[in-house]
Image (cartoon, rainbow, N blue to C red; front, side, top):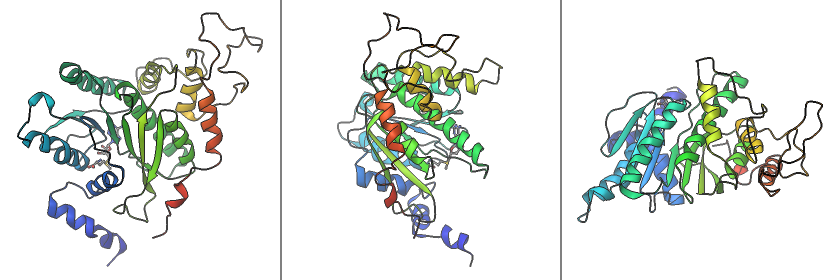
Amino acid sequence: MGKASRDKRDIYYRKAKEEGWRARSAFKLLQIDEEYNIFEGVKRVVDLCAAPGSWSQVLSRNLYLPAKLSPNSNDSDLPLIVAIDLQPMAPIEGVIQVQGDITNARTAETTCFYSTIHISRYYDYHPSINLFPLHISVTGLHDMDEFVQSQLILAALTIVTHILKRGGKFIAKVFRGKDTSLLYCQLKLFFTEVTFAKPKSSRNSSIEAFVVCENYSPPDGFNHKDLHLLLEKIGSPSGADDLDCSSGWLEGPNKVYIPFLACGDLNGFDSDRSYPLPKRADGSYQSLDPVQPPIAPPYKRALEMKKASSHGVQGLEKLSLDP
Ligand SMILES: C[S@@+](CC[C@H](N)C(=O)[O-])C[C@H]1O[C@@H](n2cnc3c(N)ncnc32)[C@H](O)[C@@H]1O
């Protein structure tokens, strides 16, 4: 019997069939919850790249159904679960589905709409957890894979920064590679706790891991609307002018944060300054406009993260590739 067929019939594959999960990856989320208690106190969840829906099933069974079946159940207090994917999926009780591309600005808007309309109507606060099985179809062309990954991260962060409340969580599947440290640093900009986990149901032979980000706490002065603009332009087939990160359209601390998030770039910035000054045509720096934000930490955090990325990420080495 070949390795692939043996793998397919592992214990989690069988258990998933027996217990009615749409994919064995349900166990990965359940095991992440066992270790990090991610569902505690959670009332709002957005499941990005959700089809065929095993993570949404976990959310329905662990959050929605217990609340619905509780004797004190109140319709206005049921958890809100929004699932997004390019593909349609069979309905799941308590899960609102949005079909769309998460790298597209319109999908991001729809997600925000669904999340905020329910929240503002009933609860007046934002979702506390985002799940993101970041799925990259590996092409084998390194540049292409890297580009797709960076686009998905940008898309996920756009949605995250628009709807996550302070203290919220973000869980994403990632592929470990040379850029994992950079990804860690990018996420560290927004969350005080970023940990890589390898649940036991994730095959040792797979380079997948899960990043568990806790305590959402965006840096001072970060304007999330700029991420959305970037997504819109990049995702637009309409021929709209490309907004690259050095085109001068960014202001204040975002001059540092956005290039760092979009492509890990902190080059060209003077590390003695809190944020870069605009340059004149002759290359000299313009003085600070008095209405600009005061010189304060803004990009020190990004710079520290960038430095940390060259020293490796604690915990990652534990995620051995060996069985
Ligand atoms: C591995 S599957 C996710 C499995 C799912 N989390 C589960 O538990 O059943 C990856 C999904 O990502 C979706 N996907 C990939 N790129 C996407 C994008 N740009 N926008 C929305 N969905 C995307 C694919 O359609 C696919 O259904």
